[in-house]
Amino acid sequence: MPNKPLHPTPPPRYLCVTSHLQRSGGARELCRSPKEAGESWELAMQGTERPFVWSRSGAEAGQELISQILPRKEAERCAGQNELQNVFWWGIGNSLGPNVRIAGSSCGGELDIQFSVILSDAKERDKDPGEVWLWTQWEDGAGRLREVPKHVLVTSRGDPDKTQHYALTCRSPERLELLPQRFDPALCTNYKSLKEGKRTKVGGGQSTFLVVGNLDSDHNNGKYNYGFRAKLIAPWCVKLVARRKLSPSERSLLDSWKAAGDWLAFVQTFRG
Image (tube, rainbow, N blue to C red; front, side, top):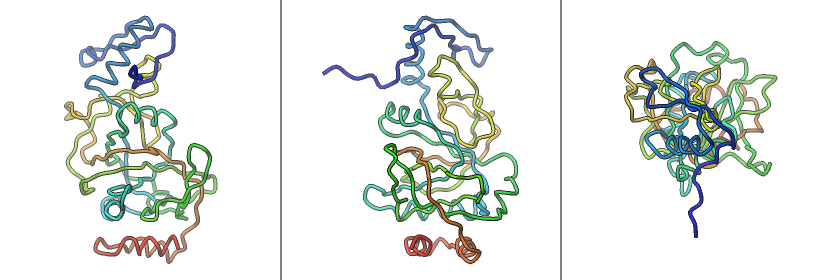
């Protein structure tokens, strides 16, 4: 049986592709035929550059990243059982679209994910929101509603205009903790743009990106100094669609979590 291609076929047109061999010394663009553009796409997918996810993280839903969110996510990771062993969900504000599934499939069923601490202070609405929401259901690709796993807690700030939230489904065999970890987004390319034969730099107001690059290259010029890594697994980036408002007492209880506690029992006090 012939092998199936592990990557999407570029559009059937001439594409301008930036030569990544020239990036450090002034990038140049080469107009290539569909065949040549396809070869460049293969090189990015199969060579030293690979798709991965980059997420900038800070205070969220009234909780600090280092002292509150990370200890909770570590407890969540440790509580997962069977097929959910070492699995945690990380809430984000934007979707990664269908490309994250395509990229994950092309890389054998998982993607690297780089979490980096944001450079500036979190916005006041994230540090001290008027409301905090707990998300309880997610929508799968067929439009079916599914319950968030019983060991998972995903919260966000409340917003009257917010009808959905998203979560990265992650796995890590190692403890979640911030480490000195330089990251330079200038070494990465937007995944969608590369599929289209371009090389658009990563940036914008969103917090999380699907990119192509090499996490093992020299990132010492990067401004992001601290972070941690995990693997992104199916269903990749889920859309959260059902939520409820936490009461003031529940918010206080959420803030009171201590690492030595019974995480599953703690989750059940919120999930019922």
